[in-house]
Length: 220
Image (cartoon, rainbow, N blue to C red; front, side, top):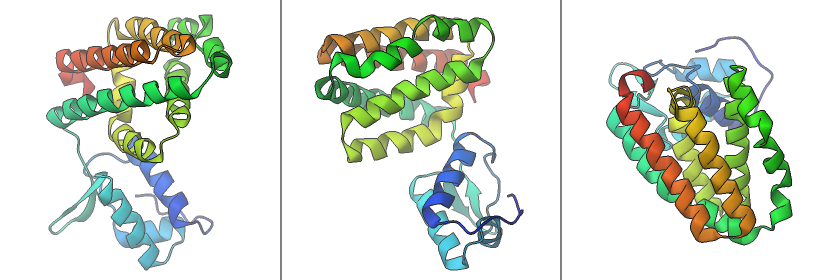
């Protein structure tokens, strides 16, 4: 847990930062999160630090262990597989709502994002840029769905699968397949075909799940 002193921050900002660190594995599974360290790192009162930990626990990002206190949760293969099953259903609904709530021109910038540069970043080995394009598209879908409850559920799943998403993109053949699949989702949204858009995103999630099963030793 970082101990450097920061400017005073809010509970909400501390939660967002901790979610980012845990989901990206800047804080590894099993890392201890002492309340005092958290309070010092974010210049929060102990009571506020407890609020941060309570929220992280509610999101299943940390667990409480005897004689250890709060520790970063581990995500095993079975849990990862189940999370992807849930993500398939949530993504399907999000894409359907996004299709119904938008017009084709709303996606012009995403179409450009998924143009030649989408493949070029991969060929150049710039996986960060490639994954960033995917994350931007997913964030736009979630925003366009206009459903706060759905957005919260998607965030909870994403927090626990972020590292896996990146590793899946690096698996042999997966990125090329993903490019085709993400473009198919976008094309269906632009056509206004909610049924096709939902089907395409479900297929994308199922194929990602298959890759996770095939390369499980690498993914986790």
